[in-house]
Image 1 (cartoon, rainbow, N blue to C red):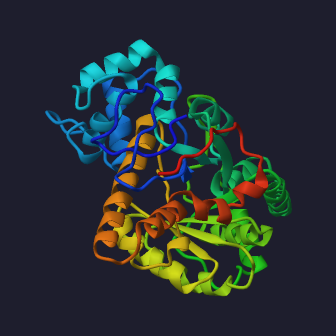
Image 2 (image 1 turned 90 degrees about the vertical axis):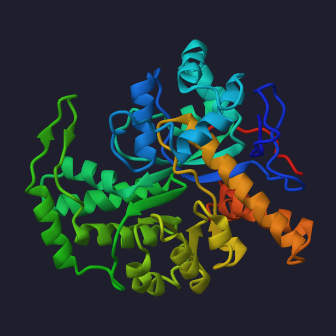
Length: 389
């Protein structure tokens, strides 16, 4: 398995050689703390671009334009073709033709095994056509651990609970059951108070949720057309913290969560902030303030590493649907860390050995500690040995 991220000047075809991530900076196999898996089937140009647009947080490309002419598109064209035996920057049509020729499963294997990621923390819970943790681990020849998303868990409980008492009791049981196999919990939240919501408020919120009837979906599944109730979201958050498992907080701006972060300081539960752009620096600042809080390193590690102790930041891809997004996120992270390390060493800020140690913390070491990956040993699949510089 290719276990290091690559420099654009040294990446070659997928021939079994290990790509390098920059002069003098050898990274261990990365731990990707947040992603969603990949699609199973073949993708044409239109569907591939749709997934590129989703990754960029945008809608379809306007007429006459293409998402291959974007930062993500350029990154895909630079680093992914060599893993399939093509030259860098080949045309999108040629790349996708080669992808189809290889077949979706083989192409995904080559891409995932060339990304340099050894361990994946895969978000689960909602019905999805994407790969499961076991499927991703097999394709990547790595390990995958499950992060249970709380909103779909609560929705599934609501769909099978006829009364408020049943909903509250079943939610507690579902959380306990999930905690027996999950590596962490995750929740999207914009605000959480310093104290758990009043039980009466939770009951009223549960009654409101149960009053919304499921709407039949065309594919046979059911969906509820309502955003998560803020009271129930906070109830879920406090309940997850009580399990002792790490909890990922997916948020826009993390500042409204400061009271909650302060209130949970003595619980013994680690919280990991995964903010939206451009709030990664603020999240790193909060990670520096609270001992139990960690933060995603974000797309610009030079910014976040200047705001928090290095052992409080973690790498993630956030990849969804396209195996190419695992490759590009890992490559961009490796290059950013290599540039930063070279700058620090040149300026006498640290030695080369210290730079490698710091990069290894952000790339994998901190995630292994926070998510207790070495102790767990329960991830799906098994990866290859690591690489040092």
